[in-house]
Image 1 (cartoon, rainbow, N blue to C red):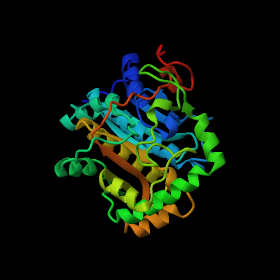
Image 2 (cartoon, one colour; image 1 turned 120 degrees about the vertical axis):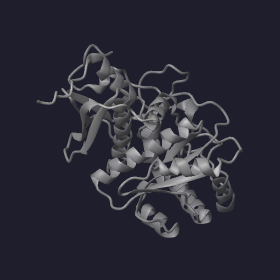
Image 3 (cartoon, rainbow, N blue to C red; image 1 turned 180 degrees about the vertical axis):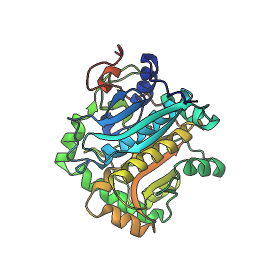
Image 4 (cartoon, rainbow, N blue to C red; image 1 turned 30 degrees about the vertical axis):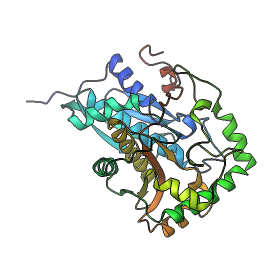
Length: 329
């Protein structure tokens, strides 16, 4: 007897997937992705015209962002009760293809992470002064472990403070970087903003210098004070064995699993990548902190001291390069 081929996606299911992808985190909230649906295959493609020449000169953060969107897409497919296979693509436009298979019940873990997608926030402010329990920290870190990807809690915080303080001073005085950041800072407030960019009310001088993005007026504490503030937070560094396009995507997928796991446990976080683009910074970071592999991102997390509003999102129709799919608006 011939097996029945997997059913193609309905309009409602396409919308279900699009809503999950639209909530993924991205560099400067640029949302640099689009979807192309072909029966039971969904391509995650690069949204052209979205470039951050000063912050992300080599497009690494864009690939990390697409990796995060890919995790949301995979979780949404599984939440629909379908199996799927993710294949990275070495294509100028398409970064990965998700092939959707037959019916398969989602695991409790997949459901928990899927339901955390709309609740995840970029919390760039200070955290509540309460230490995250060891068991929770272990679970959050373990969520990102995958083939070729490692998630570690950094030691040598005095060295990390020295490096981050130096990076903050460099970025604060980089006029080109500052102009670009101003362009991507959305002067919007509230919970229903539409578009892209970083909400002004999502930034704060009270957090670590690089956690709130470095602006011209960002204060830089001395290294001892900064090391103490780092010690009061929960930090993770996502590393990959090598650095290829596939590694960048895998790191983004792992980072999103870490973030969603933290969200499911009532935690909030933010990602630090700006310093890692400075010449020689990643090599120095790996050396000073005795890291195994290539550092891709720093994730800080904890309990929120104040609620964080969601960042603005583009209309769902913007996810489809050939026009709104299935009547999505």
